[in-house]
Amino acid sequence: MLHPAEPMQRLSLLVDLASLLPREVDLDTLLGRACDRLAEAMNAERATLWLVDAERGDLVTRLAHLPEVKELRQPMGKGVAGEVAASGRVARVDDTTLDARFDPSADEATGYHTRSLLAAPMTDGPGQPVRGVVQVLNHRDGHFDDEDERYLSALARELSHVLSLTTLRAGDSERPGLVMRGPYNRIVGRSAAMEQVYERIHLSAQTDASVLLRGETGTGKTLLARAIHVNSARQTGPFVTVDCTTLPSQLVEAELFGHERGAFTGADRRVPGRVELARGGTLFLDEVGELPPRSQGKLLRLLQDKRFERVGGRETLEVDVRIICATHRDLEALVATGEFREDLYYRMRVVEIEVPPLRTRGPEEIERLLRHFGDLYAERYQRPQPHFSEAALERMRSHAWPGNVRELEHWVEGAVVMAPDGEVHESKLPQPKLPAELSGLTLPLGLELEEARRRYVQAVVDDCGGRRAVAAKRLGISRNTVTRLLTKVSGEDG
Ligand SMILES: Nc1ncnc2c1ncn2[C@@H]1O[C@H](COP(=O)(O)OP(=O)(O)OP(=O)(O)O)[C@@H](O)[C@H]1O
Ligand SMILES: [Mg+2]
View (cartoon, rainbow, N blue to C red):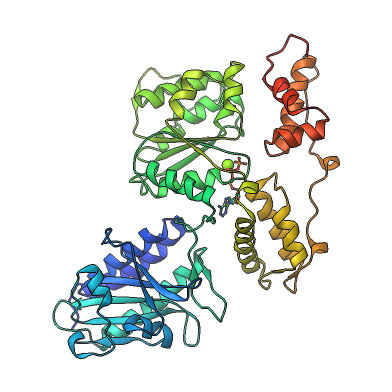
C-alpha cells in the first residue's frame, strides 16, 4: 500500500538523479544519496546497489551508510542480486527465511538482518546488458507489492541511464557491466601516480585549506580543482574560476575584488568581484603565477584574513571562500626574480598537489585515456567506437605527450573524425606538431635584448608543455642555460 507522501517522493527522486548527474559528484556520493532517497520513497529500511564489475565479472557493492564495510562481492547467478543480474528480471522475496534464493552471506558480513527484499536490474531495457542491481530491504509494514515492483523497475532503468552517462564504461557484450575507474566519475586514471593525487584531493576536500595544484599544461589541474570543490562540504555553493592569463593586468583587481561606482573611467555602477560571487563556495585562481604584483598583495590579505576592499571602496568586506590556485609556471623562479611575492607563495601552498605529466603515468594509463576519449568522441560524432591498430597503439604508448591529457584528447578526437569505420591505423593519426608550426610570439620593439630573449625562451618552454629539456633541444642550448635565461632579471650578460 502506498503511503500518502510516497508518490511525490517517488517523482522527486527521479528528478534528483537527473540533476545530480552533471555535477561531477563522485560515484559513491551519487549512489549513496540515491539509496537514501530510494529507501525513504519506498518505505523500506534500506536500499543498496550492486554494480557489475566488468573487469572481474562479479557484482560489487559499496555501502555508503556502512563505512566499516568497504565493499561486498557476489558472484553472478548467486543470491537474489546475482540472479537478477544474470537473468535481467526483477525478483521479490517476501520472507527471506522461506526463500532458497536468499544468500545470507551479505547479512553475515554487515550484521544486518534482511526480512524482505525487492531487487531490480539496472539495464537500458530488455535484452540490454545489465549494469547492476538496485534493491530495497525490509518493507516497514510487511512486504513489497506489484506497484513497488513496477516503480523500482522504472527507477532501475533510470539509474542505468544515469550510469551510462558517467565515464564508467559499459563493458562489451561478453562482459557486461562497468569498469570502475578512480573515485571521481569524470577523471580517468588508475596509475599509482594518480592514486596519490586522488588521496591528496580526497584529504584536502575534507578541509578548507588552501590548495596549490601544480603540473604541466593539460595534466588536469582545472578538472582536479573542480573535484576538490564537488567533494567538499561546499559542494552546494558556487565554484568560481578566474583565469589570470586572460585578463589585462589593470583589470584583474577589479575583476577579482569588484569595484565601486566611479572607481575608474567607465565604472558607472558598483560591480561585485569574483571573490564575492564565490561566497560560501570555492574560488579557483587559474594560472596564479600571472597575477600582477598589486593583486598579489590583496590576495595574500584575502588568504590570511578573508578580508578585502573593492577597487575604489573604503569599506572592508569579509567573505567566506575556499581558495584553490593552479599554475604550470615555475613559481620558485618567479619568486627568485621578484615577480611573485614570497609570502604569498608560502601562504598559497598549504597543500601542494603535483599533478604528474602523462608520460610518467605508464602505457596502460595512456590506453585507458584512449578508450575513454574514444567512447566520448564516438558518441559525440556518431561514429563507431574506435579500434586502434597495434601499430597505432604502439605509437600512442610511446609518444611523449608534451601537451599531456589535453593533447591526447585532441589526438583521439581527430582520429575518431578521420575513421568513419572506426578503424584507426597509424597512417590516420594526427601528426605531432612540428617546430615549424610553432605559434608566433609578438614582442614589443622597445624591449631590452635580455628581456626579449627571456620572453622568447619562456614562450618556447610553454609550447613544449613546460618541459625545459624538450625546449632546450628545440633551442639548441642546454637545459641549464634555459633555466638561467628564464630566471635572469636582466642587465648582466649571459
Ligand atoms: N584524468 C583525466 N581524465 C579525463 N579527462 C582528463 C583528465 N585529465 C585531463 N582531462 C581532460 O583534459 C583536458 C585538459 O585538462 P585541464 O584543462 O584540467 O588541464 P590543466 O592542467 O588545467 O591545463 P592548463 O595548465 O593548460 O590549464 C580537459 O578536457 C580535461 O577534461
Ligand atoms: Mg587549466
